[in-house]
Image (cartoon, rainbow, N blue to C red; front, side, top):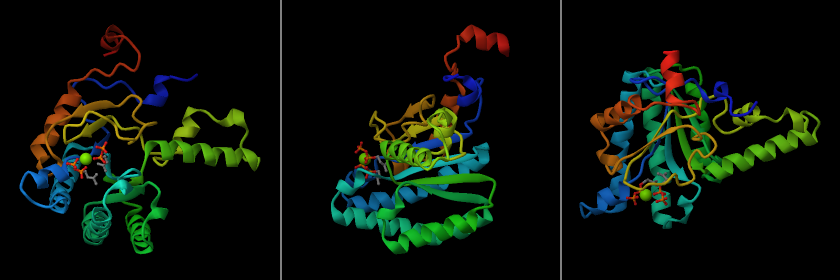
Length: 254
Ligand code: IPE
Ligand code: IPE
Ligand code: MG
């Protein structure tokens, strides 16, 4: 049966901590421009918010954190900005992998990395391999990621498996489809956060956010500190996740 709550996680009660948090880290450019600085300065300043968010996730017992770092549409930006973002990604990977090892963090990069410079692709694969067995937090960086790309890729992979006789069309269900997306066995996000004030999803995790709690804040990403993260988690804890049921049904099951 489709739409079964089993495939969507169990209803959360008040005060619950999200298992998976997904964030659109937006507002870096405006943060820099407001200070009369180049947009690059905003991207660099955002790295500190990434660090504090990772620490907060560990403190709260969040198991999976997915950060939108570069969308499939961000190639449309000026070449200098795109290049700067690639360099920032490369240097952050170089620097942070040691820290991930000592904090038991597993890195996964989701998105079409084949479009990146060879050196960056190699560094991504090495970092993923080194941290593969870490258990405390799964840190997923969405890079050259698009929700529509992910769904299309999944459909293409499953179609190829049917063509080769590995699967029949009847084998394809929501569970197999979900497992075949870039998130693989990771759970759907429980809490989605977008900083920077825009009220849109910008082609992030389209398949996976079907039942995610959405949280939007005007705070620009470089200003999104531990206190802001805690506000989002507290707001999540105050929501009643019904997954199609009635509030009374959830109350009587408590
Ligand atoms: C988000 O900040 C970072 C990336 C898209 C890489 P922006 O660069 O979009 O910042 P604003 O939205 O222009 O302020
Ligand atoms: C979304 O932010 C992508 C990332 C944060 C990486 P954008 O700033 O690119 O989104 P739009 O274009 O305003 O929707
Ligand atoms: Mg933006």
